[in-house]
Image (cartoon, rainbow, N blue to C red; front, side, top):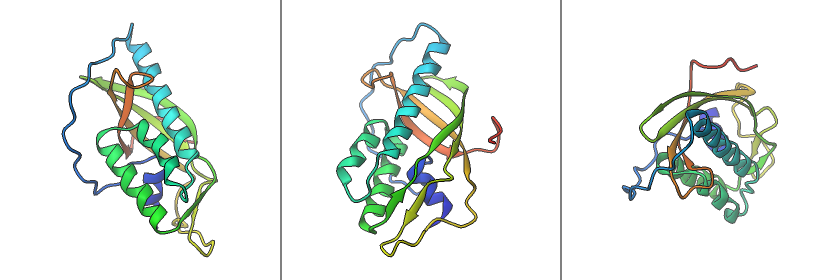
Length: 172
């Protein structure tokens, strides 16, 4: 398994996703300020990472909490990667830890965050207990998270896309 596939499971969306069916427009939540909106987006992303940390790849019911925090491409990608890892009998160990998170910008109903996520303790093991993670995978992932406003979501946002990034906060 490549580092990109691991990243998709843990924090990053995998490429090659099926295009989701168009969704009904949802009412946009109203925030008192841009700072309040970014705080809600941060809480959403933290809840998403917490849900990923609770995944038991042998129990697909644990995937539902991850899906609850996503929409669009991120949802389709997580469904594909988690189902594939489950079908392959892979075991997930360790936890991802957000070490830095800051706002990048806002466009329409989307907010973007930059994050550093420590995945040093995270491993994926095949049925024989051998790691399938690329040995050259860095311990910290630099990501860009796009969140879409959704008034039905607990904090007013859902994760819609996660990708690697080249700029933003330095990860240490």
